[in-house]
Length: 254
Image 1: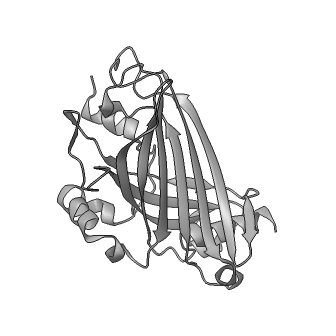
Image 2: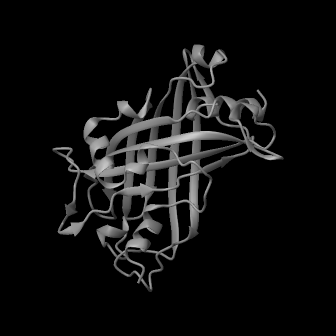
């Protein structure tokens, strides 16, 4: 398959070529690791991403199905919540510290044709994406000694999207999908771990829903009470993306 064909199939799996909104919901856990210490399950984790696709051609964005060599733009927002590892209730505090949940608006991506890793698994197809991150931290240690361990932010995000091979063989603009996500990252800023060695591993799995209404009621209610705009994808492309680190800086600009 050509890079353009691979990207088109990834787009059908991750979003929808007709520009309709697509909601992913995921659930999992967050584990800590540190030298000389046992691994610990610190939090449950649950989140949603609502996205839509636009084509990006030489003339600019257009309908997603008409994408040419320019590829696609995925416009999305994502919210995710740290949970009590036992009760799975949304946490507001942890070790007397205020929990800062994930409110990433936007969480956009720009896709150009590339050899998307694709693995045929009999009646399923898997697209896998490995995203190593390394860039200047939004929270310099000199300004945020309790919240940041390094002046360079480093993390690794590992995605897998699974879809039925039979569905992908058709021409539907969107195909059913499940996903897995693993993330290695530093301690979260609100955890106030300073320069303590170690960090976190997120391990989650999720599904492409038929609509936002299928998100669990508890999660929809929490979003509606705090940031109701996260029930929809963004209407316009904006940048840069929000992250847990940039969001924390907005709460505590120093």
